[in-house]
Image 1 (cartoon, rainbow, N blue to C red):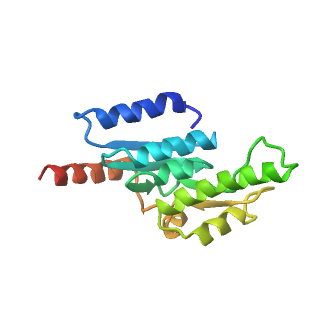
Image 2 (cartoon, rainbow, N blue to C red):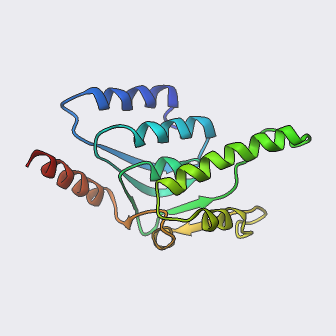
Image 3 (cartoon, rainbow, N blue to C red):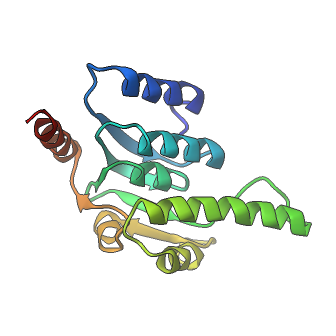
Length: 175
């Protein structure tokens, strides 16, 4: 999320959707996370692209990178990859009921999107977000296999696996 700005990435994804020469899109992720609204906009763009998509987590996928990863039709994570699942954080100072409600509403959007685009239940995702596993913080760090076991990611695999999935989808579409 930090190396490619959403102002650049979203128009590129839309351009890929409009280009008849582009048959599918691979999303390769290694992110510390970033802006929640921007991440959800990217995730919604991927989810509604209208072409086959696959994501692969290489290294770490943290914070708002989770909805971006699960937005694809098929998700992969390398065995050494990881996902940090934690509640929404922000620069808002929670000193009024309204600011708390705003953070809760944003978190609900993230939870709803993730649950709708993966096989994890809302109850389980909320549990993983609230667990005290991260040093000095709340949340859970999932290994690649744990992310698959939890139903967040479809399968272990790397770039070749994701490309193979996209090739098969494209071959099936042209048959």
